Image 1 (cartoon, rainbow, N blue to C red):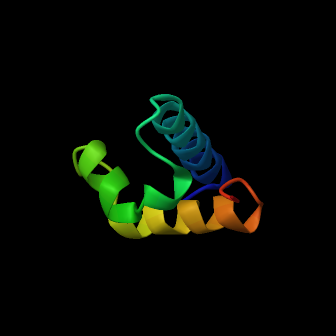
Image 2: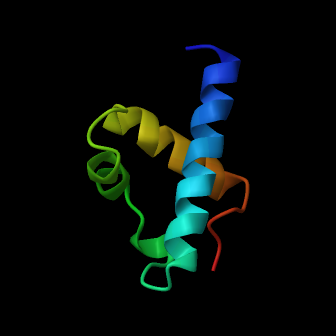
Image 3: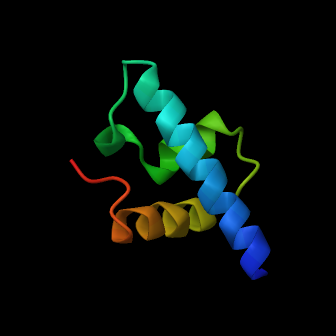
Length: 64
């Protein structure tokens, strides 16, 4: 997987999480790889989602 593809996945995850948080019914702690996988209809491998979420956490995006 290329760097560009990884960044687009990270950007997609960040956008998804911001949308879920804005809906008022979800906080970052409830967003798991399985939740995202199901929400996206299984179009992205769950291990890629898990890696992306871990990267966001590492960079402080999902704190609090």
